[in-house]
Structure formats: structure tokens, C-alpha cells
Length: 329
Image 1 (cartoon, rainbow, N blue to C red):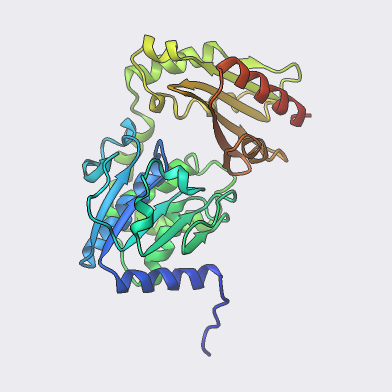
Image 2: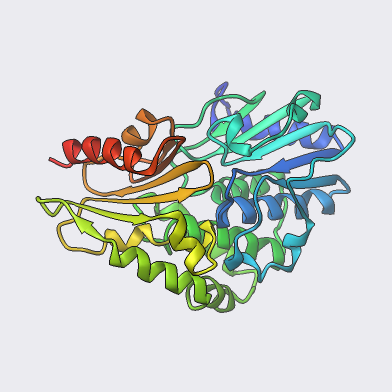
């Protein structure tokens, strides 16, 4: 019996993406600003497969690749802040809940014949010609693996390592609620290729730079608990980063420390960056923290979200604190 594919279903969108891949030769790939393991891993995996199919790819990132992903020698192929001179037929954007999340494309997206938007955040906007958004997936890497399966492509060890990094980082080592049986099955299939996953985990979770450890200490020293003990807040000012010659990427995983405290339901990290304040949220239980992020122009998952505000640090803290303390009850 012929399989019936519902229009606009995940399967139908996968089929449309495969059709676009088969019909085109030049692909522009980009992820969100301040890229993470899922963004970079997914981008490198797609590029590798497309090149094996004889396609040309251009990898773009608005911001540098995080230091903890430096063991990917292939990250040097990613052009930081540098757009190609000639237009590409297809633009594939990864984990960009909005087009602006890709950074300053300077109108380059208007030159592409088609835009493919692949994401797993429920707050994602359908800005592409094809919008493959699956909030039931743990990560974009998991969606990409599903795409490869649908294409009949067997990933090699290098591609498996890329996707594994995407999955393991976006699930917090399979700890976040977005992890499901499908996530573990996908990871198992990737491990079957035989890549050295222990080495990957060593670089990701057993290696830390001096600035990362110092900025972690600064954040923990600033740790506050709400009167109820349900919310943990941490604060990093510009001078903290300057003191230790640290960058924003050195503070990426600090938010999770607030969630370790018994009784805490919400963790918030405030970071003062050039021209803005970045706020990262985590939550658990029945609290949908993405609603808070969206209220301030951000987005994310139910239990992991963030936003960026262009106003004084103390004003951001005051506004966010008031809303968070209201919903923690």
C-alpha cells in the first residue's frame, strides 16, 4: 500500500527539502548568533553530506565558533561575519527562530531562490519557503539525521561526530526534558559508526579554560535565591569579563548551576555585553520559561530560553526579576 503523506507534515517537508537538494548545486548555510554545539554540528554535517553529493557549500556564522568546539578542525571552513560575493541558490538556516537570529545578513537572503528554515524551538517563526520546525525533537541535529535517513544517506564517522555533538550539547548530556527514546536511538545509530565519542565528551565536558573557570567563580559568587527559594539568579557585568579576559562563550553553561539547588524551579543568568544585556533562563516542572523570554522579545523551549535587551543592566534585572518572581509562585 502506498504511504500517504499529509501536506505540511514533517515527512512532506522532508520530501520537499530533498527535492530542493537534488535540483540545486550551491547552498549557503548559517546558524544563529553566538552559535552552540547543535548549530555548528548540524551545519558541518549538512555541508559534509552535500559536498559528498557533489554540491558546493558556503558556511557562515555571525559570531566566532565557541572555544569548546575548537577540536573540530573543520570549523575553520566557517566564515565568521564574511558573506560570499556571489548569491547562492539555496539558503539553509539552522536554529534561527527568526531571520534576525542569523545575524547581519545584509539583505543576502533576498538573493537566494529558496530559504529552508530548520529548527526545533516551538517559538520559531515560519520565515522560510520551507519551514521544517519540529519541537518534539531534542535538537536540530536530530532533525538533520532524520533528513539524511530520508535521503538514503549513510553518515560517516566525521558526520556522526558532528551530529552527536549537536544532540549531546542541546540535551545537556541527555538530561533535559526534550530527550526522548528517539533521541537515544539516534545517538545509538551515530555511535555505531565507530567514532571516538569518549574523546568528544572529554573535550566538551572535561576540559575548561582558565577564563571559563574564573568567570564561573564570579557568577557563583553573585548567586542569589528568591525568598521562596524557587528562583536562582546570577549576574555578570562587563568588568567581570574584562577582569579575566573572558568572552561571552566562557559563560555558556553557567546557567545550569542554579538548577542544581534543591527546591529551585527557575534559574536566570544576566550577562552584560557590548550594547545589550543577555538573559538566559532555565526552568522545570510546570513553569514554561519561554513565555517570559517571548515577553521580552526572545524565545526558546519550555524549559530553556533567552532574550537580549538594549537597556541599562540594572533596569533589565529589575524588569526580569519582577516577572520571574511572579510566575515562580
